[in-house]
Image (cartoon, rainbow, N blue to C red; front, top):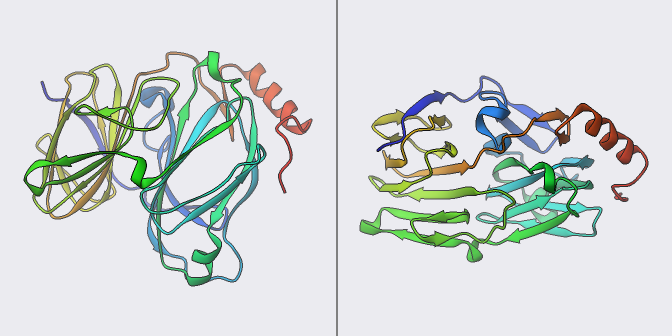
Length: 288
Protein backbone atom coordinates (compact mmCIF):
# COMPACT_ATOMS: atom_id res chain seq x y z
CA UNK A 1 0.00 0.00 0.00
CA UNK A 2 1.30 3.43 -0.94
CA UNK A 3 1.94 6.03 1.75
CA UNK A 4 -0.66 8.75 1.41
CA UNK A 5 0.60 12.31 1.11
CA UNK A 6 -0.79 14.38 3.96
CA UNK A 7 0.48 17.76 2.77
CA UNK A 8 2.88 19.35 0.31
CA UNK A 9 4.42 22.41 1.94
CA UNK A 10 5.80 25.13 -0.30
CA UNK A 11 9.12 26.83 0.33
CA UNK A 12 8.65 29.55 2.97
CA UNK A 13 8.21 33.05 1.57
CA UNK A 14 11.42 34.48 3.02
CA UNK A 15 14.77 33.08 4.14
CA UNK A 16 16.31 33.79 7.52
CA UNK A 17 19.98 34.23 8.33
CA UNK A 18 21.70 31.96 10.83
CA UNK A 19 24.76 33.95 11.73
CA UNK A 20 26.02 35.57 8.54
CA UNK A 21 26.89 32.40 6.65
CA UNK A 22 23.70 30.38 6.37
CA UNK A 23 20.75 31.74 4.36
CA UNK A 24 18.07 29.23 5.27
CA UNK A 25 14.42 28.42 4.79
CA UNK A 26 12.87 26.67 7.79
CA UNK A 27 10.49 23.73 7.21
CA UNK A 28 10.51 22.19 10.71
CA UNK A 29 8.96 23.51 12.92
CA UNK A 30 7.91 26.29 10.51
CA UNK A 31 5.65 24.08 8.38
CA UNK A 32 5.04 21.10 10.65
CA UNK A 33 5.15 20.73 14.45
CA UNK A 34 7.95 18.90 16.24
CA UNK A 35 5.55 16.36 17.76
CA UNK A 36 4.01 15.57 14.37
CA UNK A 37 7.39 14.89 12.74
CA UNK A 38 9.20 13.39 15.79
CA UNK A 39 12.07 12.45 16.09
CA UNK A 40 12.96 15.37 13.79
CA UNK A 41 13.03 18.72 15.57
CA UNK A 42 14.24 21.20 12.97
CA UNK A 43 15.04 21.35 9.28
CA UNK A 44 16.83 24.37 7.81
CA UNK A 45 17.62 24.37 4.09
CA UNK A 46 20.15 26.69 2.48
CA UNK A 47 19.39 26.33 -1.26
CA UNK A 48 22.22 27.09 -3.63
CA UNK A 49 23.44 30.64 -3.03
CA UNK A 50 26.69 32.38 -3.90
CA UNK A 51 27.94 34.33 -0.90
CA UNK A 52 30.84 35.64 -2.97
CA UNK A 53 34.52 35.78 -1.94
CA UNK A 54 35.17 37.07 1.56
CA UNK A 55 38.34 37.85 3.51
CA UNK A 56 36.34 37.30 6.69
CA UNK A 57 35.01 33.80 7.34
CA UNK A 58 31.20 33.77 7.53
CA UNK A 59 29.20 31.48 9.77
CA UNK A 60 27.88 31.05 13.31
CA UNK A 61 30.07 31.81 16.32
CA UNK A 62 30.24 29.77 19.53
CA UNK A 63 26.85 28.55 20.77
CA UNK A 64 25.58 25.68 22.97
CA UNK A 65 23.43 22.62 22.33
CA UNK A 66 21.95 20.02 24.65
CA UNK A 67 19.53 17.11 24.41
CA UNK A 68 19.59 16.26 20.70
CA UNK A 69 21.77 15.75 17.59
CA UNK A 70 22.64 18.09 14.72
CA UNK A 71 23.04 16.61 11.25
CA UNK A 72 24.64 18.85 8.61
CA UNK A 73 24.58 17.67 4.98
CA UNK A 74 26.77 19.47 2.45
CA UNK A 75 25.64 19.68 -1.17
CA UNK A 76 27.81 22.56 -2.43
CA UNK A 77 30.67 24.45 -0.81
CA UNK A 78 32.33 23.42 2.45
CA UNK A 79 31.43 23.73 6.14
CA UNK A 80 34.03 23.75 8.92
CA UNK A 81 33.38 23.27 12.62
CA UNK A 82 35.01 23.19 16.06
CA UNK A 83 33.48 22.02 19.32
CA UNK A 84 34.34 22.06 23.01
CA UNK A 85 35.12 18.33 23.07
CA UNK A 86 38.16 19.13 20.92
CA UNK A 87 36.72 17.90 17.63
CA UNK A 88 37.36 19.74 14.38
CA UNK A 89 36.18 18.82 10.93
CA UNK A 90 35.35 19.98 7.42
CA UNK A 91 32.57 18.59 5.28
CA UNK A 92 32.53 18.83 1.49
CA UNK A 93 29.76 17.93 -0.99
CA UNK A 94 28.35 14.51 -0.10
CA UNK A 95 29.77 14.55 3.43
CA UNK A 96 27.73 14.69 6.64
CA UNK A 97 28.57 15.98 10.11
CA UNK A 98 26.52 14.11 12.72
CA UNK A 99 27.08 15.70 16.13
CA UNK A 100 25.48 14.31 19.28
CA UNK A 101 25.18 17.20 21.73
CA UNK A 102 23.83 14.93 24.47
CA UNK A 103 24.70 16.30 27.92
CA UNK A 104 25.88 19.60 26.46
CA UNK A 105 28.47 20.99 24.08
CA UNK A 106 29.67 24.26 22.59
CA UNK A 107 30.41 24.49 18.88
CA UNK A 108 30.80 26.89 16.00
CA UNK A 109 30.29 26.29 12.30
CA UNK A 110 31.32 28.41 9.37
CA UNK A 111 32.38 28.43 5.74
CA UNK A 112 35.66 26.57 5.30
CA UNK A 113 38.50 29.08 5.04
CA UNK A 114 39.64 28.36 1.47
CA UNK A 115 36.04 28.32 0.24
CA UNK A 116 35.44 31.68 1.94
CA UNK A 117 38.29 33.25 0.00
CA UNK A 118 37.07 32.04 -3.40
CA UNK A 119 33.33 32.07 -2.83
CA UNK A 120 30.97 30.07 -5.00
CA UNK A 121 27.69 28.18 -4.74
CA UNK A 122 26.85 27.09 -1.18
CA UNK A 123 24.07 24.59 -0.47
CA UNK A 124 23.39 22.62 2.70
CA UNK A 125 20.76 21.15 5.01
CA UNK A 126 20.81 21.09 8.79
CA UNK A 127 18.51 18.64 10.50
CA UNK A 128 18.04 18.31 14.27
CA UNK A 129 17.20 14.83 15.58
CA UNK A 130 15.79 14.39 19.07
CA UNK A 131 17.27 12.04 21.65
CA UNK A 132 15.08 9.84 23.86
CA UNK A 133 15.00 10.92 27.51
CA UNK A 134 17.29 8.04 28.52
CA UNK A 135 19.99 9.30 26.12
CA UNK A 136 19.83 13.07 26.62
CA UNK A 137 22.78 12.96 29.05
CA UNK A 138 25.06 10.87 26.83
CA UNK A 139 28.59 12.23 26.47
CA UNK A 140 28.88 14.53 23.43
CA UNK A 141 30.47 12.96 20.38
CA UNK A 142 30.77 13.33 16.63
CA UNK A 143 30.44 11.11 13.57
CA UNK A 144 32.37 12.27 10.49
CA UNK A 145 30.53 10.63 7.60
CA UNK A 146 32.35 11.04 4.30
CA UNK A 147 30.84 10.74 0.84
CA UNK A 148 32.90 7.66 0.02
CA UNK A 149 31.76 5.96 3.25
CA UNK A 150 28.03 6.24 2.58
CA UNK A 151 25.95 3.22 1.75
CA UNK A 152 25.33 3.38 -1.99
CA UNK A 153 22.42 1.88 -3.85
CA UNK A 154 22.87 2.21 -7.61
CA UNK A 155 19.42 2.26 -9.18
CA UNK A 156 18.64 0.13 -12.24
CA UNK A 157 18.20 1.55 -15.75
CA UNK A 158 20.60 4.43 -15.07
CA UNK A 159 17.93 5.98 -12.84
CA UNK A 160 20.45 7.40 -10.37
CA UNK A 161 21.95 6.59 -6.97
CA UNK A 162 20.84 6.64 -3.35
CA UNK A 163 23.41 7.68 -0.74
CA UNK A 164 22.27 6.02 2.47
CA UNK A 165 23.27 8.20 5.44
CA UNK A 166 21.31 6.39 8.16
CA UNK A 167 19.06 3.36 8.36
CA UNK A 168 18.57 0.98 5.47
CA UNK A 169 17.43 1.54 1.89
CA UNK A 170 16.31 -1.62 0.07
CA UNK A 171 18.88 -3.64 2.04
CA UNK A 172 21.75 -1.12 1.80
CA UNK A 173 22.76 0.21 5.25
CA UNK A 174 24.05 3.69 6.07
CA UNK A 175 27.04 4.40 8.35
CA UNK A 176 25.36 6.68 10.92
CA UNK A 177 24.68 5.26 14.37
CA UNK A 178 21.40 6.53 15.81
CA UNK A 179 19.69 6.42 19.20
CA UNK A 180 16.26 5.65 17.76
CA UNK A 181 15.29 4.17 14.40
CA UNK A 182 15.99 6.78 11.69
CA UNK A 183 16.32 6.55 7.91
CA UNK A 184 18.01 9.35 5.99
CA UNK A 185 18.52 8.98 2.24
CA UNK A 186 20.16 11.42 -0.20
CA UNK A 187 18.58 10.47 -3.52
CA UNK A 188 20.02 11.67 -6.83
CA UNK A 189 17.87 10.88 -9.86
CA UNK A 190 18.71 11.29 -13.52
CA UNK A 191 16.17 12.69 -15.98
CA UNK A 192 13.20 10.33 -15.96
CA UNK A 193 14.72 8.21 -13.19
CA UNK A 194 12.43 6.38 -10.80
CA UNK A 195 12.94 4.90 -7.34
CA UNK A 196 10.65 2.91 -5.07
CA UNK A 197 11.20 1.97 -1.45
CA UNK A 198 9.20 0.94 1.60
CA UNK A 199 9.31 2.60 5.00
CA UNK A 200 7.52 1.55 8.19
CA UNK A 201 3.91 2.73 8.27
CA UNK A 202 4.23 4.07 11.82
CA UNK A 203 7.34 6.13 11.04
CA UNK A 204 6.94 9.86 10.61
CA UNK A 205 8.12 10.35 7.03
CA UNK A 206 8.83 13.34 4.80
CA UNK A 207 10.99 14.41 1.89
CA UNK A 208 12.54 17.68 0.75
CA UNK A 209 13.02 18.36 -2.95
CA UNK A 210 16.53 19.84 -2.97
CA UNK A 211 16.79 20.32 -6.74
CA UNK A 212 14.49 19.69 -9.67
CA UNK A 213 10.89 18.57 -9.80
CA UNK A 214 9.52 15.13 -8.93
CA UNK A 215 6.29 13.16 -8.88
CA UNK A 216 5.78 11.43 -5.53
CA UNK A 217 3.12 8.71 -5.31
CA UNK A 218 1.40 10.29 -8.31
CA UNK A 219 1.45 13.86 -6.95
CA UNK A 220 3.68 16.60 -8.34
CA UNK A 221 6.22 18.11 -5.91
CA UNK A 222 8.04 21.20 -7.18
CA UNK A 223 11.60 22.23 -6.37
CA UNK A 224 12.16 23.17 -2.72
CA UNK A 225 8.82 21.73 -1.59
CA UNK A 226 8.46 19.56 1.53
CA UNK A 227 6.26 16.47 1.28
CA UNK A 228 4.74 15.17 4.53
CA UNK A 229 3.36 11.62 4.44
CA UNK A 230 0.55 10.21 6.55
CA UNK A 231 1.11 7.29 8.91
CA UNK A 232 -0.50 4.59 6.82
CA UNK A 233 1.00 2.53 4.03
CA UNK A 234 4.66 1.83 3.34
CA UNK A 235 5.50 2.34 -0.33
CA UNK A 236 7.00 5.53 -1.73
CA UNK A 237 7.68 6.01 -5.45
CA UNK A 238 9.57 9.03 -6.75
CA UNK A 239 9.85 9.91 -10.45
CA UNK A 240 12.19 12.66 -11.63
CA UNK A 241 10.92 15.23 -14.12
CA UNK A 242 14.46 16.11 -15.24
CA UNK A 243 17.49 15.62 -13.00
CA UNK A 244 16.52 15.83 -9.32
CA UNK A 245 17.92 15.59 -5.80
CA UNK A 246 15.67 14.55 -2.92
CA UNK A 247 16.30 14.12 0.82
CA UNK A 248 14.02 11.42 2.23
CA UNK A 249 13.70 11.00 6.00
CA UNK A 250 11.72 8.76 8.30
CA UNK A 251 11.89 7.95 11.99
CA UNK A 252 10.10 6.10 14.73
CA UNK A 253 8.28 8.71 16.83
CA UNK A 254 9.72 9.37 20.28
CA UNK A 255 6.52 9.55 22.28
CA UNK A 256 7.81 11.83 25.03
CA UNK A 257 7.17 15.49 25.87
CA UNK A 258 9.22 18.02 23.89
CA UNK A 259 10.22 21.25 25.63
CA UNK A 260 12.42 23.47 23.46
CA UNK A 261 14.23 26.64 24.37
CA UNK A 262 16.57 27.82 21.64
CA UNK A 263 19.49 25.37 21.44
CA UNK A 264 18.19 23.17 24.31
CA UNK A 265 15.60 20.39 23.83
CA UNK A 266 14.51 18.50 26.92
CA UNK A 267 11.36 16.86 28.34
CA UNK A 268 10.40 19.34 31.06
CA UNK A 269 10.68 23.05 31.87
CA UNK A 270 12.76 22.12 34.91
CA UNK A 271 15.28 20.34 32.70
CA UNK A 272 15.48 23.42 30.47
CA UNK A 273 16.31 25.58 33.50
CA UNK A 274 18.99 23.04 34.49
CA UNK A 275 20.45 23.15 30.97
CA UNK A 276 20.69 26.94 31.08
CA UNK A 277 22.33 26.80 34.51
CA UNK A 278 24.81 24.15 33.35
CA UNK A 279 25.71 26.29 30.33
CA UNK A 280 26.15 29.41 32.45
CA UNK A 281 28.27 27.44 34.93
CA UNK A 282 30.68 26.39 32.18
CA UNK A 283 29.76 22.69 32.27
CA UNK A 284 29.66 22.48 28.47
CA UNK A 285 33.39 23.17 28.26
CA UNK A 286 35.30 26.02 26.67
CA UNK A 287 35.54 27.08 23.05
CA UNK A 288 36.94 30.31 21.62
